[in-house]
Length: 215
Image 1 (cartoon, rainbow, N blue to C red):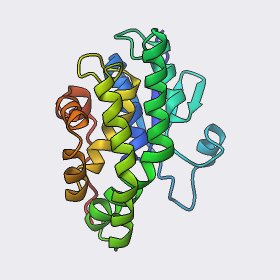
Image 2 (image 1 turned 60 degrees about the vertical axis):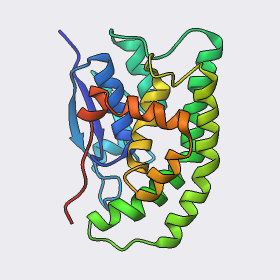
Image 3 (image 1 turned 180 degrees about the vertical axis):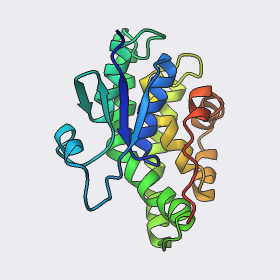
């Protein structure tokens, strides 16, 4: 009997989408359960699965795993389908590097500042802050430059082999470029922009688009 796969997360979370992209790329059937990490009362059952009140959590039968990078590594190792984690040392290192760059340096400016204040908050009927947008764009430029250099190097984000680096980066870029300022910033980094043009057309990226809230 096949163990059920359940992804618990917030519809609009970029990290929830990253996990969904990996599941789609591996061809894994799964169910979803909506959990709002911003809610005052998070279900006690969820807190047993994730003590830090964040999303997502992947459950495979009785096994729970949180932290998105751990989830996508588990999905790649536990299920059949195309390998998303390369074995060659240089490529493996670059995949891990891209994931770390986005988590540590890219997520906050590109998603929490630029996308949230230019796109998400207005769509949800909430107030945005132009200072946050400007600061986010400024902080995003070194990230875009570093990624552009990695694309140009050719070990990762090559437009041919889809890896966990692509899974992690594509949803964040998808949010970032919805802001006109984000799209303009990306256009100045030709190698990275070419990668995004290709990645944005993958079925897994299109299928996991969460849309925007209706304010």
